[in-house]
Image 1: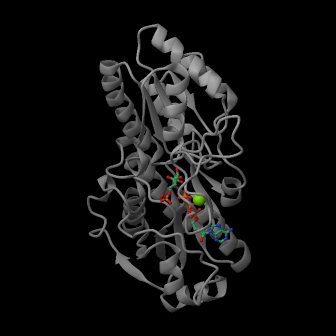
Image 2 (image 1 turned 180 degrees about the vertical axis):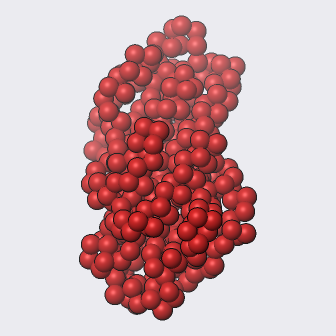
Image 3 (image 1 turned 90 degrees about the vertical axis):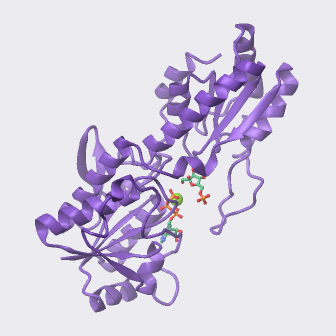
Length: 343
Ligand SMILES: Nc1ncnc2c1ncn2[C@@H]1O[C@H](COP(=O)(O)OP(=O)(O)OP(=O)(O)O)[C@@H](O)[C@H]1O
Ligand SMILES: O=P(O)(O)OC[C@H]1O[C@](O)(CO)[C@@H](O)[C@@H]1O
Ligand SMILES: [Mg+2]
């Protein structure tokens, strides 16, 4: 079988490990051939691809980013877009199937290509935000949490030296998993997530409580968090190429509010894309490699429209529709468990 692999949407540590796992298993066990589409769906609609063999993927599991590049191209748009054109491109190049590695947008596009055009696609979930349903964890998340936790640890020592309040802003557009886990790991005194709007009074109460114990408060906030007085997440950077608000800046908004109300000198730090860059953690390398292997197995058994996912410690097959039907939000019980330690 000849399989085309693509990485699409925001990048994520572990993408290369998926590619390596898929190519090694397919080459060694099934005698598959591989190509990599360049820059996500853009390579698919433009027929832009590079050969991938076992030598190309050597040493890739530890490499951040994606050797194939990524984009947010819509495969239904443009001259070569749409299922008919894509099937023609596959036929011309002798490609039997595609493995699409991406988030909810990429997987929705993949599902439509299967449903509307009968294209042979297997999905692999990726997101540092851990917001995809139908998988317990996605690779990239563990690495992002490690990076955010290290930042919290470092900010804590300078906070203590100066008796300041530190606001640490982490990624998380719709869900607060990175904030929850890094905040718990780093011993944050308050964790603010999109799923649970809070009042500024409550945040200041936690902060003052910490100060009264002689400690320097550390507050971790997801970029998608909003105060109970705000209609939606803070955005002051305009829209991205797809008309979605570019998030980021809630930390800078909160710091002066906290300083004014508590009298504690406050500083905000945005970790930003550092959370998405560099080498994946060992956990993410293993998960990504297993998902790559499973995706090739699913192609071998022709389970088009399915997605490989983690359930407990096992890699299982689900339908892409299950993964794109809703978000994996932080449940109340997980937030309430952490909140016992706030203040
Ligand atoms: N309903 C859809 N039909 C066709 N294409 C879609 C659909 N939704 C999204 N896409 C395409 O898939 C691309 C990737 O989606 P998106 O930019 O949301 O990234 P993602 O895979 O969800 O990753 P991220 O976690 O970074 O958001 C989009 O730019 C868009 O062109
Ligand atoms: O800057 P970019 O690449 O458009 O994406 C930023 C977004 O991507 C994510 O990292 C993952 O979806 C979000 O947390 C963040 O809002
Ligand atoms: Mg998306």
